[in-house]
Length: 320
Image (cartoon, rainbow, N blue to C red):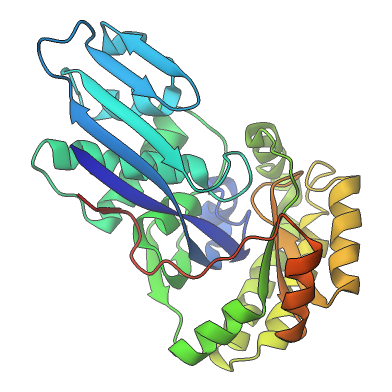
C-alpha cells in the first residue's frame, strides 16, 4: 500500500500571469506558499483474485473491469500517461473541500503521479512531477488554467516562482527566517466562504489577451511584493494583497461575488489590511493579512469558518 500526502497552496502574488497566453510573451513571477492541509491518496495494485480490476473511492465509487471505463478524468489521465495496464485500488482523503481555490486538482494529480511511480519502484523529482502534471492538465485533459498549482504541490514551502517565455520555471525559497515566517502566519487568516465553484469557466475568461494590461499590473505588484518580503514588511505585503485583489477583479466579472465582497468588507472592519480570494475566484477561501496578532483572536471567535494553518515545507511526498 502506497500513501501519498500532497499540500494545497495559497497563491499570494502573480496569479493569472502563469497562463501560457501571457507568460509566453511577458514571463511570469509568482509568490505563495503551501498549507499544512493536504490531499491523501492510498493506492495499491488490485489483488488478482478479487472480482473487480479497479476500485476508485473519492466523492463517488467506481468499480471497474477496465481502466478505459474510468470516469474520473484526472485519474484516467494519469493512468493513460503512465500506460498503466494493471488494476488499482485507490482511496482519496482531503483536509479541505475541492473547488475552493487551493489548487486541489493539481495536488491530486501530483500526489497520484508520485504514488503510481512509487508503486512501480520508480521515483520522480519535484521538477519532473511538476512538468508531467502540467502536461496532463493543460495538454492531455485540455483544461484551462495556469501552471503554478502543479509546481506548488510538488515543491511545498514559501517561495517565488519565475516562469520564462518558454515555460521553464525556477523555484526560489524566499530569504526570510523562521521568526518572520511565524509572525507572517500569526498575522494571516484563511476564511472559508462556505461555497465552492467550478473553476474552468472562470479560468477560460482569465486566459484572454484582452486582460494583458491588468495582468501586467499584477506582475508588477508581485515584484514589489518580493521586495517587501526581503525587507520583512508584513504591513506592505497586506497592502499589496489588497491592490492585487482590486486589480484581479478587473480581469473578469466572474472573479468576485456580492457575498464575497461583503465578507471582505467585514474582515477589513475587523482588522484585515488586505487580502484576496484564492484561485480563479467566485467562492472558496479568502486569505488576508491582519494589522496585528491581536486581531486574530477576534477573527477566530467571530468566523466559524476560520482555518488554522501553517506552512508545509516538504511538498508532495510518500509517507508510507
